[in-house]
Image (tube, rainbow, N blue to C red; front, side, top):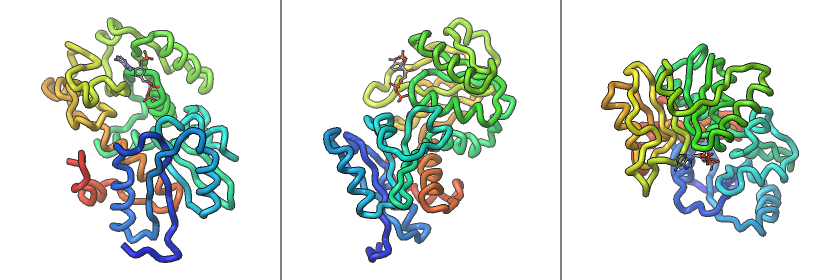
Length: 283
Ligand code: ATR
């Protein structure tokens, strides 16, 4: 890699960030596609958040990603906000242009890109989403944007799922989003089921958000967890004949969507897995 005065910096801020594979994904792609960018991760204390952001502006960073625990706090530092990011209520990508900061959320776009890789077209489809947290919100907003016919939200805390459904239906003036309980899920005929909860994630790999569920073999099943690559949930769905996908496709998809925002460059999804094959967790 050549470091010259034209090289532009892109940051990642969060705390902790040591576990992140985003620097590996981004820097590998920038090298492979001959892009003069470098991606650096910074663990930032909350007391230093504003100083860190001002520092990135002063140093002409092209932008930065934001991760836990600042995806909501960052909203207070932005000059402009993308519509969907506003609805999701969280930002994971910031573009810096002429000293102004605009926030986006590429998690939902990343998820849709992952579905594209499976050849799954969301329009008109019936989907169940497990969980009602930040990841669920991002995925639901983009599924609605893609024109799904139903989203059933199954959440441990029913109320929270119900609040999310109400908010999204209110925004889109529709009744597409429906909160359900586990008994109702068992009766549904679904095209897609997505787990957005951390249930089954390392180091608690032994648990499954849908114990003893009987899948239709034509239901596509996605878990946004990528560590382990095959959660108990995905193993169970695969055994029953379903097409399954883990969270790596969404992770790569959101990285590509952020790159498009910062640099304008479209990178083909199909080229990426080969390029990224040496990165931990990429199979
Ligand atoms: P994120 O931003 O990563 O989506 P979050 O906002 O904390 O994280 O949301 C986590 C989601 O996983 C929530 O839907 C949560 O359910 P509650 O609303 O009942 O808290 C769900 N979740 C977390 N741990 C869970 C568990 N052990 N069993 C079932 N659901 C769980």
